[in-house]
Length: 130
Image (cartoon, rainbow, N blue to C red; front, side):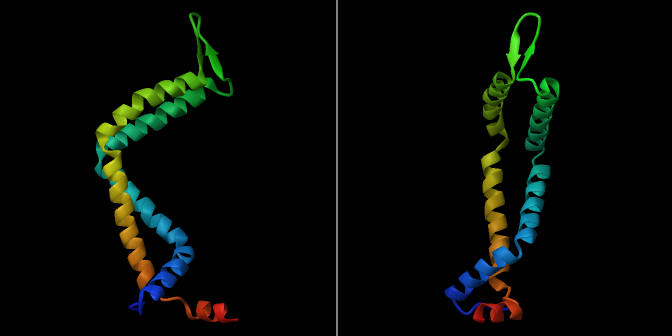
């Protein structure tokens, strides 16, 4: 770990470390997303209900594209359209955009700060020279 010498050094470190620590950075972003979801209970319940509805539609329809009731026939794509039309306006009551912005800004700050201050390993410095 060390202080970068300049902007070019910061850029090189971030470029290298983003690929080297990609799985770790993804885990950090997932943990921050989990924190966002658990602190916004209404949004969590909405996502849970939405995933449950999609699961039940898949289970109910199975591999068929339509289901025949006695009175009418319901197609799977119509059911998904109804879910979309109803749930998109409802979604915006639980501030998904502020959650998304908070998540992207906070994770970018943590990840870029870490990537800028971590030096390349000695092996990586010599592997580029050869």
